[in-house]
Image 1: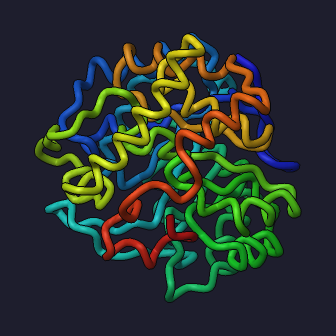
Image 2: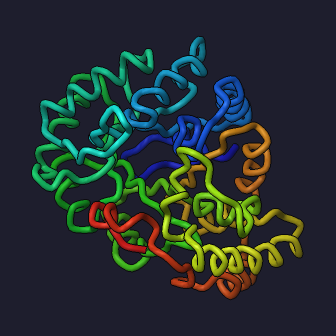
Length: 331
Protein backbone atom coordinates (compact mmCIF):
# COMPACT_ATOMS: atom_id res chain seq x y z
CA UNK A 1 0.00 0.00 0.00
CA UNK A 2 1.40 3.37 -1.03
CA UNK A 3 1.47 6.23 1.45
CA UNK A 4 0.26 9.81 1.21
CA UNK A 5 0.95 12.66 3.62
CA UNK A 6 -1.97 14.65 4.98
CA UNK A 7 -0.93 18.19 4.24
CA UNK A 8 2.40 19.74 5.16
CA UNK A 9 2.07 19.01 8.88
CA UNK A 10 -0.03 15.84 9.05
CA UNK A 11 0.91 12.16 9.28
CA UNK A 12 1.84 9.79 6.47
CA UNK A 13 -1.07 7.40 5.97
CA UNK A 14 -2.14 4.72 3.50
CA UNK A 15 -3.38 5.96 0.13
CA UNK A 16 -6.81 4.57 1.05
CA UNK A 17 -8.39 4.88 4.47
CA UNK A 18 -11.12 2.83 6.13
CA UNK A 19 -14.27 4.68 7.17
CA UNK A 20 -15.93 2.72 9.97
CA UNK A 21 -19.30 4.51 10.27
CA UNK A 22 -21.25 1.87 8.37
CA UNK A 23 -20.22 -0.76 10.90
CA UNK A 24 -22.43 0.92 13.51
CA UNK A 25 -25.85 1.03 11.92
CA UNK A 26 -25.75 4.04 9.60
CA UNK A 27 -26.67 1.86 6.63
CA UNK A 28 -28.74 -0.67 8.54
CA UNK A 29 -27.76 -3.75 10.49
CA UNK A 30 -24.17 -4.95 10.36
CA UNK A 31 -22.43 -8.04 11.67
CA UNK A 32 -19.99 -7.37 14.50
CA UNK A 33 -17.72 -10.33 13.80
CA UNK A 34 -17.55 -9.44 10.11
CA UNK A 35 -16.83 -5.81 10.98
CA UNK A 36 -13.91 -6.82 13.19
CA UNK A 37 -12.65 -9.17 10.49
CA UNK A 38 -12.88 -6.34 7.95
CA UNK A 39 -10.76 -4.06 10.13
CA UNK A 40 -8.21 -6.85 10.48
CA UNK A 41 -8.18 -7.42 6.71
CA UNK A 42 -7.68 -3.70 6.09
CA UNK A 43 -4.71 -3.56 8.46
CA UNK A 44 -3.17 -6.65 6.90
CA UNK A 45 -3.54 -5.06 3.46
CA UNK A 46 -1.58 -2.02 4.62
CA UNK A 47 -4.44 0.37 5.42
CA UNK A 48 -3.22 2.56 8.26
CA UNK A 49 -5.89 5.28 8.47
CA UNK A 50 -9.12 4.42 10.28
CA UNK A 51 -11.85 7.02 10.62
CA UNK A 52 -14.59 7.04 13.24
CA UNK A 53 -16.80 9.40 15.25
CA UNK A 54 -17.74 9.27 18.91
CA UNK A 55 -21.42 9.55 17.91
CA UNK A 56 -21.37 6.63 15.45
CA UNK A 57 -23.79 4.27 17.12
CA UNK A 58 -23.46 6.44 20.27
CA UNK A 59 -20.05 4.99 21.13
CA UNK A 60 -20.64 1.62 19.49
CA UNK A 61 -18.11 2.29 16.74
CA UNK A 62 -15.31 3.26 19.07
CA UNK A 63 -15.90 0.16 21.21
CA UNK A 64 -15.94 -1.97 18.08
CA UNK A 65 -12.63 -0.52 16.94
CA UNK A 66 -11.13 -1.06 20.39
CA UNK A 67 -11.99 -4.74 20.02
CA UNK A 68 -10.62 -4.94 16.48
CA UNK A 69 -7.40 -3.09 17.33
CA UNK A 70 -6.65 -4.82 20.62
CA UNK A 71 -3.10 -6.17 20.70
CA UNK A 72 -2.00 -4.23 17.60
CA UNK A 73 1.07 -2.03 17.68
CA UNK A 74 -0.35 1.46 18.32
CA UNK A 75 2.15 2.99 15.94
CA UNK A 76 0.95 0.78 13.06
CA UNK A 77 -2.30 2.69 12.47
CA UNK A 78 -3.72 6.20 12.71
CA UNK A 79 -7.07 6.97 14.34
CA UNK A 80 -9.10 9.90 13.03
CA UNK A 81 -11.95 10.78 15.39
CA UNK A 82 -14.83 13.24 14.95
CA UNK A 83 -16.69 14.73 17.89
CA UNK A 84 -19.35 17.27 18.75
CA UNK A 85 -22.58 15.92 17.30
CA UNK A 86 -25.17 15.55 20.01
CA UNK A 87 -27.57 12.62 19.93
CA UNK A 88 -30.62 11.64 21.95
CA UNK A 89 -31.50 8.14 23.23
CA UNK A 90 -33.65 7.62 20.15
CA UNK A 91 -30.67 8.53 17.92
CA UNK A 92 -32.20 11.93 17.15
CA UNK A 93 -29.77 14.76 16.43
CA UNK A 94 -29.43 17.50 19.04
CA UNK A 95 -27.10 19.95 17.34
CA UNK A 96 -23.37 20.55 17.73
CA UNK A 97 -21.21 21.29 20.77
CA UNK A 98 -17.81 22.85 20.14
CA UNK A 99 -17.25 24.47 23.56
CA UNK A 100 -13.68 23.98 24.81
CA UNK A 101 -14.83 22.17 27.95
CA UNK A 102 -16.99 19.85 25.84
CA UNK A 103 -14.08 19.13 23.47
CA UNK A 104 -11.97 17.85 26.36
CA UNK A 105 -14.88 15.90 27.80
CA UNK A 106 -15.60 14.20 24.47
CA UNK A 107 -11.96 13.20 24.09
CA UNK A 108 -11.78 11.72 27.59
CA UNK A 109 -14.65 9.38 26.75
CA UNK A 110 -13.21 8.51 23.32
CA UNK A 111 -9.82 7.58 24.75
CA UNK A 112 -11.50 5.26 27.23
CA UNK A 113 -13.79 3.63 24.65
CA UNK A 114 -10.96 3.21 22.14
CA UNK A 115 -8.56 1.91 24.77
CA UNK A 116 -5.76 4.23 23.74
CA UNK A 117 -3.80 7.11 25.24
CA UNK A 118 -3.99 9.35 22.17
CA UNK A 119 -5.91 10.13 18.99
CA UNK A 120 -3.93 10.84 15.84
CA UNK A 121 -6.34 13.35 14.26
CA UNK A 122 -9.16 14.97 16.25
CA UNK A 123 -11.81 17.07 14.55
CA UNK A 124 -15.22 18.64 15.15
CA UNK A 125 -17.74 16.81 12.98
CA UNK A 126 -19.57 20.03 12.16
CA UNK A 127 -19.19 23.69 12.99
CA UNK A 128 -20.96 24.80 16.17
CA UNK A 129 -22.62 28.10 15.15
CA UNK A 130 -22.63 29.27 18.77
CA UNK A 131 -18.89 28.81 19.34
CA UNK A 132 -16.11 30.54 17.34
CA UNK A 133 -13.98 27.97 15.56
CA UNK A 134 -10.93 29.59 17.18
CA UNK A 135 -12.16 28.44 20.60
CA UNK A 136 -12.84 24.88 19.46
CA UNK A 137 -9.47 24.54 17.71
CA UNK A 138 -7.77 26.25 20.64
CA UNK A 139 -9.04 23.50 22.91
CA UNK A 140 -7.72 20.81 20.56
CA UNK A 141 -4.40 22.66 20.45
CA UNK A 142 -4.18 22.33 24.24
CA UNK A 143 -4.84 18.60 23.89
CA UNK A 144 -2.04 18.39 21.32
CA UNK A 145 0.31 20.14 23.73
CA UNK A 146 -0.71 17.72 26.48
CA UNK A 147 0.00 14.70 24.26
CA UNK A 148 -3.56 13.38 23.96
CA UNK A 149 -3.92 14.41 20.30
CA UNK A 150 -1.30 14.37 17.56
CA UNK A 151 -2.94 16.50 14.83
CA UNK A 152 -5.90 18.83 14.38
CA UNK A 153 -8.44 18.18 11.64
CA UNK A 154 -11.64 19.78 10.40
CA UNK A 155 -14.80 18.42 8.81
CA UNK A 156 -17.40 19.98 6.52
CA UNK A 157 -16.47 23.64 6.94
CA UNK A 158 -16.11 26.41 4.36
CA UNK A 159 -12.93 28.12 3.14
CA UNK A 160 -13.22 31.09 5.49
CA UNK A 161 -13.54 28.79 8.52
CA UNK A 162 -10.53 26.78 7.36
CA UNK A 163 -8.42 29.94 7.30
CA UNK A 164 -9.55 31.01 10.77
CA UNK A 165 -8.88 27.58 12.24
CA UNK A 166 -5.47 27.26 10.56
CA UNK A 167 -4.42 30.61 12.07
CA UNK A 168 -4.85 29.09 15.57
CA UNK A 169 -3.06 25.80 14.91
CA UNK A 170 -1.85 24.04 11.74
CA UNK A 171 -4.63 21.89 10.32
CA UNK A 172 -3.59 18.47 9.00
CA UNK A 173 -6.63 17.75 6.88
CA UNK A 174 -10.21 18.59 6.08
CA UNK A 175 -12.65 15.71 5.92
CA UNK A 176 -15.43 16.41 3.46
CA UNK A 177 -17.59 14.59 0.94
CA UNK A 178 -15.90 14.37 -2.45
CA UNK A 179 -16.88 12.07 -5.28
CA UNK A 180 -17.91 12.14 -8.92
CA UNK A 181 -21.39 13.00 -7.63
CA UNK A 182 -20.27 15.64 -5.09
CA UNK A 183 -17.74 18.11 -6.47
CA UNK A 184 -18.59 21.32 -4.66
CA UNK A 185 -15.18 21.36 -2.97
CA UNK A 186 -13.42 22.06 -6.25
CA UNK A 187 -14.42 25.72 -6.60
CA UNK A 188 -13.03 27.28 -3.43
CA UNK A 189 -12.29 24.75 -0.70
CA UNK A 190 -9.72 22.61 -2.50
CA UNK A 191 -7.68 25.62 -3.70
CA UNK A 192 -7.72 27.00 -0.14
CA UNK A 193 -6.46 23.72 1.27
CA UNK A 194 -3.62 23.64 -1.23
CA UNK A 195 -2.68 27.22 -0.56
CA UNK A 196 -2.40 26.49 3.16
CA UNK A 197 -0.81 23.05 2.87
CA UNK A 198 -3.78 21.12 4.25
CA UNK A 199 -4.73 17.62 3.11
CA UNK A 200 -8.17 16.29 2.28
CA UNK A 201 -9.72 13.02 3.40
CA UNK A 202 -12.67 12.32 1.15
CA UNK A 203 -15.71 10.47 2.40
CA UNK A 204 -18.71 9.34 0.37
CA UNK A 205 -16.44 8.44 -2.55
CA UNK A 206 -19.02 5.91 -3.75
CA UNK A 207 -21.95 8.23 -3.26
CA UNK A 208 -23.18 6.11 -0.33
CA UNK A 209 -23.59 3.18 -2.66
CA UNK A 210 -24.86 4.87 -5.81
CA UNK A 211 -21.45 4.34 -7.45
CA UNK A 212 -20.74 1.00 -5.81
CA UNK A 213 -22.31 -1.07 -8.55
CA UNK A 214 -24.43 -2.87 -5.96
CA UNK A 215 -27.44 -0.53 -5.63
CA UNK A 216 -30.29 -0.96 -8.09
CA UNK A 217 -33.45 0.98 -8.88
CA UNK A 218 -36.33 -0.16 -6.72
CA UNK A 219 -34.00 -1.26 -3.92
CA UNK A 220 -35.48 -0.12 -0.61
CA UNK A 221 -33.33 1.08 2.27
CA UNK A 222 -33.75 -1.13 5.32
CA UNK A 223 -34.46 -0.10 8.92
CA UNK A 224 -31.90 2.36 10.24
CA UNK A 225 -30.42 2.97 6.78
CA UNK A 226 -29.86 6.72 6.37
CA UNK A 227 -30.31 6.38 2.61
CA UNK A 228 -34.02 6.06 3.26
CA UNK A 229 -34.15 9.84 3.80
CA UNK A 230 -31.41 10.84 1.35
CA UNK A 231 -32.61 13.05 -1.52
CA UNK A 232 -30.28 11.32 -3.97
CA UNK A 233 -32.00 8.01 -3.26
CA UNK A 234 -35.55 9.36 -3.55
CA UNK A 235 -37.84 8.31 -6.37
CA UNK A 236 -37.04 10.22 -9.55
CA UNK A 237 -33.56 11.12 -8.38
CA UNK A 238 -32.19 7.65 -7.78
CA UNK A 239 -33.01 6.48 -11.31
CA UNK A 240 -31.18 9.44 -12.80
CA UNK A 241 -28.16 8.92 -10.53
CA UNK A 242 -28.00 5.21 -11.26
CA UNK A 243 -27.97 6.02 -14.97
CA UNK A 244 -24.79 8.01 -14.30
CA UNK A 245 -23.38 4.98 -12.48
CA UNK A 246 -24.24 2.78 -15.47
CA UNK A 247 -22.38 5.16 -17.78
CA UNK A 248 -19.37 4.95 -15.48
CA UNK A 249 -19.69 1.18 -15.35
CA UNK A 250 -19.30 0.96 -19.12
CA UNK A 251 -16.07 2.94 -18.91
CA UNK A 252 -14.82 0.81 -16.01
CA UNK A 253 -15.59 -2.54 -17.61
CA UNK A 254 -13.88 -1.51 -20.83
CA UNK A 255 -10.74 -0.99 -18.75
CA UNK A 256 -11.13 -4.19 -16.75
CA UNK A 257 -12.22 -2.55 -13.49
CA UNK A 258 -15.40 -2.41 -11.45
CA UNK A 259 -17.37 0.80 -11.29
CA UNK A 260 -16.48 1.13 -7.59
CA UNK A 261 -12.76 0.83 -8.28
CA UNK A 262 -12.91 3.49 -10.96
CA UNK A 263 -14.93 5.86 -8.75
CA UNK A 264 -12.42 5.52 -5.91
CA UNK A 265 -9.45 5.87 -8.24
CA UNK A 266 -10.93 9.04 -9.74
CA UNK A 267 -10.98 10.70 -6.31
CA UNK A 268 -7.40 9.60 -5.60
CA UNK A 269 -6.34 10.95 -9.00
CA UNK A 270 -7.43 14.47 -8.11
CA UNK A 271 -4.22 14.99 -6.13
CA UNK A 272 -1.58 13.33 -3.97
CA UNK A 273 -2.93 15.43 -1.09
CA UNK A 274 -6.25 13.54 -1.14
CA UNK A 275 -6.94 10.27 0.68
CA UNK A 276 -10.25 8.53 -0.15
CA UNK A 277 -12.02 6.85 2.76
CA UNK A 278 -13.67 3.56 1.83
CA UNK A 279 -16.68 2.69 3.97
CA UNK A 280 -16.43 -1.08 3.56
CA UNK A 281 -18.48 -3.11 6.06
CA UNK A 282 -17.39 -6.53 4.84
CA UNK A 283 -14.19 -8.18 3.69
CA UNK A 284 -15.76 -8.73 0.28
CA UNK A 285 -16.40 -5.01 -0.27
CA UNK A 286 -12.96 -4.15 1.09
CA UNK A 287 -11.30 -6.61 -1.28
CA UNK A 288 -13.11 -4.98 -4.20
CA UNK A 289 -12.02 -1.48 -3.15
CA UNK A 290 -8.34 -2.11 -2.42
CA UNK A 291 -7.14 -2.46 -6.05
CA UNK A 292 -8.25 1.15 -6.62
CA UNK A 293 -5.13 2.25 -4.73
CA UNK A 294 -2.99 0.89 -7.56
CA UNK A 295 -4.99 2.29 -10.49
CA UNK A 296 -3.24 5.01 -12.45
CA UNK A 297 -5.60 7.19 -14.46
CA UNK A 298 -4.19 9.21 -17.33
CA UNK A 299 -5.62 12.28 -19.01
CA UNK A 300 -7.62 10.19 -21.50
CA UNK A 301 -9.06 8.07 -18.68
CA UNK A 302 -10.11 11.15 -16.74
CA UNK A 303 -11.71 12.66 -19.83
CA UNK A 304 -13.77 9.50 -20.39
CA UNK A 305 -14.89 9.49 -16.77
CA UNK A 306 -15.79 13.18 -16.93
CA UNK A 307 -17.89 12.53 -20.02
CA UNK A 308 -19.74 9.68 -18.28
CA UNK A 309 -20.38 11.64 -15.07
CA UNK A 310 -20.03 15.39 -15.73
CA UNK A 311 -19.58 17.78 -12.83
CA UNK A 312 -22.93 18.81 -11.40
CA UNK A 313 -24.84 15.98 -13.05
CA UNK A 314 -26.08 14.32 -9.86
CA UNK A 315 -29.69 14.92 -8.96
CA UNK A 316 -30.75 15.69 -5.37
CA UNK A 317 -28.93 17.24 -2.41
CA UNK A 318 -26.32 15.13 -0.69
CA UNK A 319 -28.11 15.45 2.67
CA UNK A 320 -31.73 16.06 3.72
CA UNK A 321 -32.61 19.77 3.81
CA UNK A 322 -32.43 19.99 7.61
CA UNK A 323 -28.71 19.18 7.51
CA UNK A 324 -27.63 21.21 4.48
CA UNK A 325 -26.97 24.39 6.45
CA UNK A 326 -24.35 22.53 8.54
CA UNK A 327 -22.19 21.67 5.54
CA UNK A 328 -19.09 23.45 4.30
CA UNK A 329 -20.33 23.35 0.71
CA UNK A 330 -23.54 22.34 -1.05
CA UNK A 331 -23.37 19.63 -3.65
